[in-house]
Image (cartoon, rainbow, N blue to C red; front, side, top):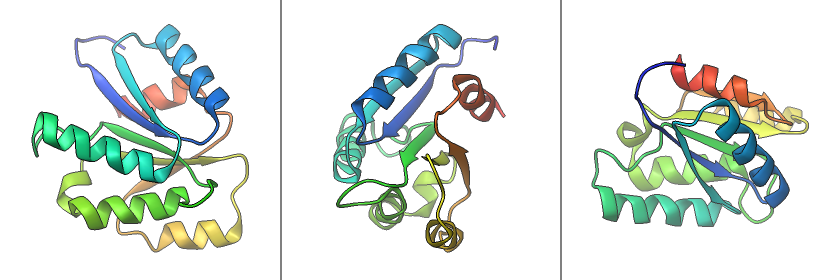
Length: 137
């Protein structure tokens, strides 16, 4: 990818090994991508609230939110529902929402289809080049 655009990805996954592997791989593929990690949906919401305070209402949302579907306490789907409720649909309309998981259950597929957001599903393990492709499309 050429150009000087910097991208910011918020990755929500309770598996710290997945977080480390993805960050390492993305740095090799695309140096202009910054990432922040949350290990739960709740932590992801707190990250977004902090960014809203620090950056203001027009710049706090990441270019992409990559969220694991299957997490304890708050699933990735519940996380997306929560941020839509918390920040409103206009705040996330330019953010690329990508769900990921090792396997997608029919129940999760049905739940995703009820969301009022545009999303993509990426199977784990996440390929770094696929993320760059989605970011730049």
